Image (cartoon, rainbow, N blue to C red; front, top):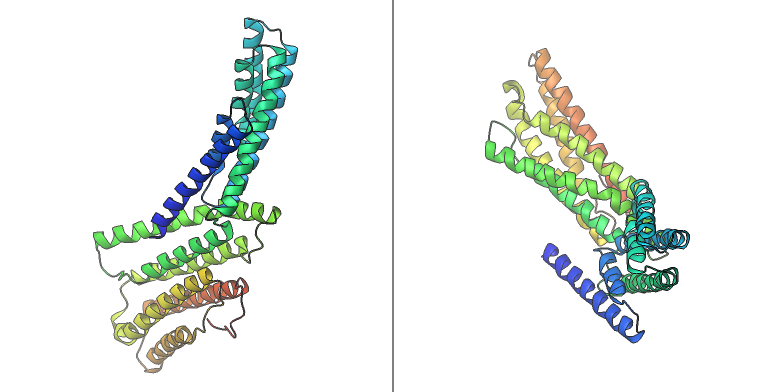
Length: 355
């Protein structure tokens, strides 16, 4: 439902931007109003921050292309050979600029349109002015639609992405890692691929949030770098636990640790899902007493094994130490993330210490 809703809202925003821009273009009698419509449709994105970035790139590229195209047209003769030389120079120079600065990728297109469609110096002046006006109008309407028609802030989207990451990690804690199972391993690989994709989106979302805040559109409480850092730390510590879970526990301690480990996994899953829900609800996370009890129960069980007087060889001791270390790191990662979620809450819902 979430994906379908996002798709429908994207279509709604695009349709609104295109239709409204066409009405404005007709009302202003723009000579080539379709450039305004194209600009409005191009910059419409799923999030406000992304639309602002697209609009800025479109305007910057149009300005650069218009200025260079106009300057080249003014210094080259109005002959077929002169026009060809001017076109080659303009798009070549702008192509190099676009390679270094991706925000200028429409600059060569703008210059080519001006030089090809306006063969004389007089026409290129008028054409450049018209293109600039049309594209600026389209960008302005596109941004306006992004802000008013089912707006989605990048701050909100990042919270959703973070909640999906936590849900994916919770899913991984639900698998049994013992033995060989190709179907299970394929499912685990699919979850990890989704997690990788969600983490990759954080870079662009961080830039979009910066755009929104620079434009004074959003003053959300998300700290993108801190959130990404804490989520990566949680994934790293979780991966360590998953790797140990693939090892067969030594028989001498297997029965004693089976239930505490199972309880701990259930508590971790519940805690991760709770943190995700708190992120999207913009609330402080709930108290994590159940998680702390589960970790304490495991620690007590591990100590109980050593206190029974059973002789433990080096491999058993190493297994216990590694598992205890991994779970301590996991508990620490969850606590750090809980602090992050609490600091990003919009309302104070009381004591939250927690995990």
